[in-house]
Length: 192
Length: 192
Image (cartoon, one colour):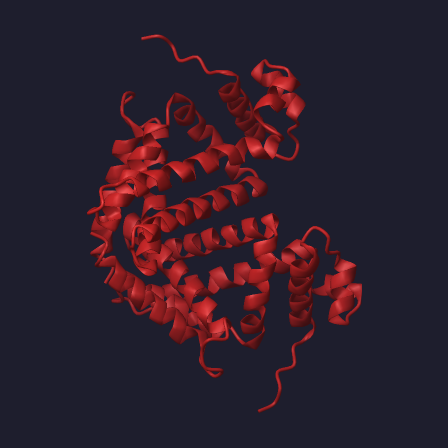
């Protein structure tokens, strides 16, 4: 199997996350990120307007994919089946870069209050995008919000397992996200 | 009934939230906040180390109250009954200041990316505090997370209704938060 070769954009993200975890988000400059990625500063700016956008870009894509999967699920899907379709859609776009990024991003986030806020905003953005997509399908507000939170928890938990090195190399993210969703669905029956 | 008279700390918070919504979080200085609250800058610094802490202080208290209520719920409580106890405990501490603050804070948050991040972090912090308290009671991880997310949604939705001016003047927050939790509980049965 050919070794995966990241392009400039991916190298910039990986370099940034490494620097954020090593020396902090605030202390990391665009120059340092470009240097570590082995590209010029102009290459950085062809891909991202600033270091903040480097993180936000991925988040917006992720929220959009989750919502698209929900929107395109068969008309007779239950709310959780639509959420599962969203997880599958987003998971299909997550490749080796994302998997490699996972543990490094966790280190970086643990060390930075600013990245914790970004990470929190990401969860809220994912939930909001899924809720909007469910409501557009005719799901009422309370179940839409609840199903979305379950989707966020499932995505995060599935991603953590998938990128945590504890599972088979050729596993896709989708199976772990869907397994986490099934766990939450079972858990919902034990709350009361 | 005596008109409610906010103390310096409450006046500072109200003044800050008004300024944040009028002119933005970044543009608001400690001097302006103190001036609007009718106190000196030293009074500000007796209550808060900086303008950021002014927002964080309330969040930490809220998370602690939610967790305390869960911890102190009767030993045989179900996970959702423990979450309900957390909502009641936190609601009991929310008075006229919080109710008055609600709509203004929503305006301020809508206008500021930084406040949106803080608000998102607050939700994540509330959920984490509740999850820890549930896990300490012996609830498994997946149901603990799910019940906590339901608690966060219920608190936010209940607070929004309570502070949104649509409900009776002498209503407490607790009844609206618990009603929202009951709605989510009913919604959980309709997801699949």
